[in-house]
Length: 542
Image (cartoon, rainbow, N blue to C red; front, side, top):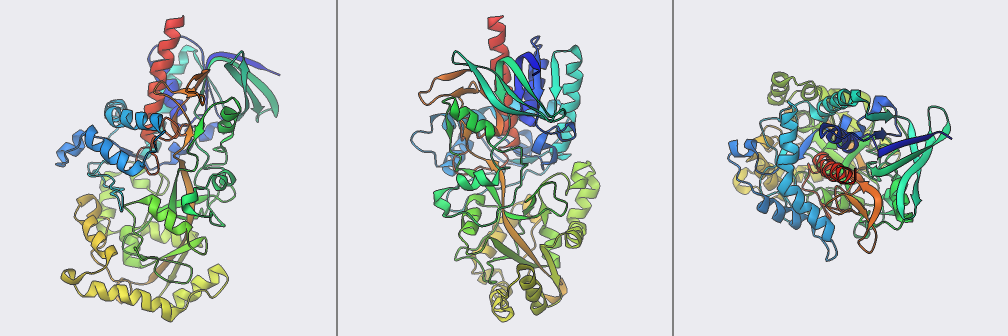
């Protein structure tokens, strides 16, 4: 069995692991560093490589330029409102405070220092429904998506590695952490390239393997009691390598793994038209002007479902439905203006930094993405009439669940409320559309009170959606030095964790809900903090 000796071993080649390795090298670290990942080099960068690239920052130049007055105090108040922390959540609270006080300097300014830019319009997400959320817009989108950021980070990492202090290994799957006299001394695993075992001996080991969202069985096992029973079908919006195996290893060592029932799943997943693995899903950004309906074609309520306010609430309501799927019903005009899909691949103009083309398509409500999905996804249904649409919907689910006259009654009631005009708009979804359109970043992507059965706006469109896994809000408990903690609060010597593996800090920094945009930035923030600590500790002991 090959034995690889190194000073620092980083398990996981996502954005947290890459940032940590790069920061250590940039700080002049002279010790040997090993960064290994279970996937191939083509997938170096993990989920961040295909991510949209939105990040939550506090009191930035873009916010001030837009007239937004923000502060770490306001952000922390919003964060704690949404999180609903429990009495024992000392480290999650500490990491929340650390985030709002440090994310702009440690992540925003760092990214700008790499030469990247953010789109000029700050977006306003997770405003809050029953719990107050973001009081002001904070969601900053990388021009070029996270893929552009990952490309630059990997290039810088490989350049920094030329001094010989960094080794990269791919297709290396870690199985067991090694312990000697109470200290983690490395790990063993399986080399998928040669189908053979290997061992790593390291003075410092860092877990950066992501969350549990790629393991749907584990997601179901940890399903929140507040959400009732999990749906019969949940799509995988992560990757099977994000399986929570290292979480189990930490537990076996006596480490704390907390709040795995806190998840940031998304409400509108569809089956990936070109899947890379079983159950692979795509996450839609739900349209605002469509009606969200159950398997019988009844509008879900009594509180209408609409995105932009509380994703946790959306997921909870959809998980409670009789069937695991729901429908979003709209027309072509609504879908052309409002449909979006999370990730770099389905936002090519943003990804490729074609700003003028991006703006023109937004202004003209280009339907290219809609046409692409209609052509490639069975979950997208188009029809000229409502009876034809419901027939196709029933055919897709294999049973006549939906009555066309009943669904027409549901939609017509909504359309009639719209037709009465703004002075008489008496529907919570319509009121929230008006609120969304008051902010410029949302106005350009939200129709102005569009009726669904408007023949001039046709044809009709129905999208079948399922819940889809995405981020783990809980994880390995760490202190503010990123050291892995035992139940008694003591550290497991030689072991650190960063990124989503830690629930983005402390085993659950977001509590029940994220203010959104805290994930990529949370990975970078925890990794940069770990680099400070590890580099400092190594220098002290050298």
